[in-house]
Amino acid sequence: MNSNQLLENEYSGGFATYIREAGDVNLIEELEISLHDFIRFVQNIPMDKFDYRYAEGKWTIKDIIQHLIDCERIFAYRALRFSRNDKTALASFEEDDYANNTNANGRSIQDLLTELSALRHSNLLFYKSLSEEQLKRIGTASNIQISVRALGFVIIGHQKHHQKVFEERYL
Image (cartoon, rainbow, N blue to C red; front, side, top):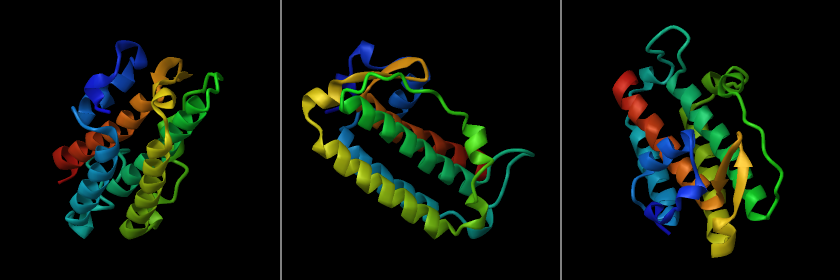
């Protein structure tokens, strides 16, 4: 399934930005390809940049990679709940609170990339296991209606968004 097959009722709000960022791609293929592209990209960043902040109070590259890990976990958890037909509205989360309570800068870049890779492979298997009906199920997260398949594109677009931030502000 490609992102251009999403219906208007499957997402809105801030999620639309990330879905546009994902581009017109196949969900399963891009979950895998974008991970490999991102790892290759990060491995080419000079070592002295991983702890760099472009302004006071801004996150380091390590902080952002941890942020990607945390958000992907949350998006995938939402997708799991909705795919299983759980109608419970799910709360939002405060990304700065998460970022302020990690040990990202005390970790090696390889550990962060290994964790991101393991998480993505798990989520790839999860998405491959879903039926068309499950992919189209919609739930509420952060007071916004979103489908299981739209959440997959959010994972991809969110990662691509931050890769652009690296290029524009950190390198």
